[in-house]
Image (cartoon, rainbow, N blue to C red; front, side, top):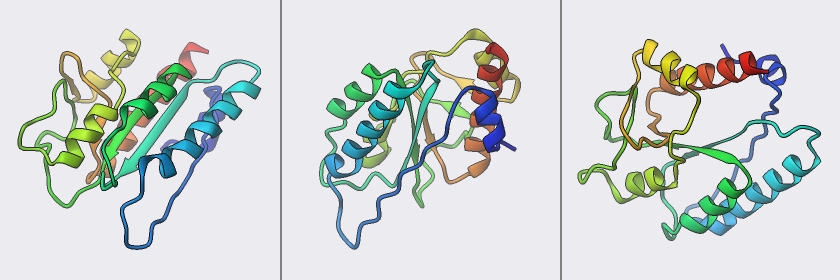
Amino acid sequence: DVCSSDLENAGMRLYHAAYLVGGKKPSLATVLSPIIQRFRQELHKAEKKPAALFFFLSDGEFSSYQFSPFKQQLEELGVVIISCYLSKHDYTHNYRILHGTSEDYWSEEAQALWQFASVVDIPEQELLALTKRGWHIEKNARFFLQINHSAMLTDLLAVLLQERQRSL
């Protein structure tokens, strides 16, 4: 299991943000602007630049799907976006796959969250570690997961943190 000491040993800190909405769809700016500001503050004051991973867990229900300006700001800061879609419908039949394209039969929310996810650009040893654990990584894959199965997130996080810890 991944714990806070693993994060600290890997030169990372884990921050979390939660936004609860009572009965209406929030705007992306309401949800993402404070998170981007927090990344700016934390990365600015860090002595050495830590690996910045943003786990965005969402049902994708927002008042709009204009993720691109927020994605651009996060990626300019060096933040890797791992977009985790929570839905009662199973869109991904192979749970250990990082998709290179969104599928036509996916909901608008799933497609928007796939677009928001960062392209997989990780060191070869991390790719090998994932494939050894049974992951399939398509060409031009993005860090998009349907997270109805928590083992997927645990597995991906364990590999990313373990490999970053080894490289320190």
